[in-house]
Length: 199
Image (cartoon, rainbow, N blue to C red; front, top):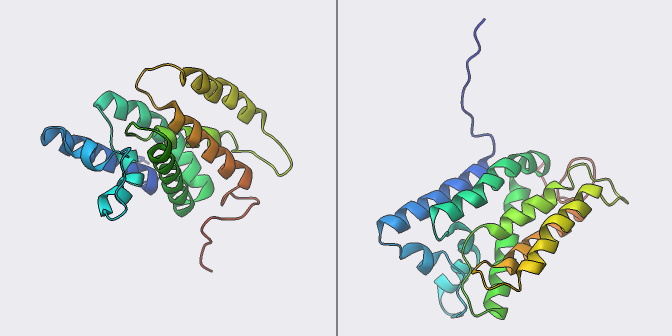
């Protein structure tokens, strides 16, 4: 009996996130490169009366400066994201992505005079959250400690370099992943859900 391999939309939140970011990049490049910096970047200036100022606090996660930036972020998101979506559920992962984007967007706008583009904060949220895959109440996963040592410690050191990369967003994303991980947000086998399933 032959086996038919059928592509499936196995991780709707992750795949939709990747597709939207790719479309933003393509349309921005086609329009002369103005779309992403104008509407998909958290800017240091904020107008409380402007819809777009509020929109950019979250939409910056979809904007990327070039294809290499996009590919580096989503190669990790497409690798780790489906595992997290299976463990925590699509709605919970969507909430975590949106919260991480909002936190990094707001704090970058408040404390820094530079713009912020890209899903790097979400990447680090997923990396730290992924280290909690087998987490049990009352335990601190050794994988979490190693990830913190390898990634966040390096980001703190790199934060003192003027390389145009927002290590601040990376660190904040990692902190969001840590909070979600210790809270077991929607994971199977314990913990409270961010979004409860209807009975």
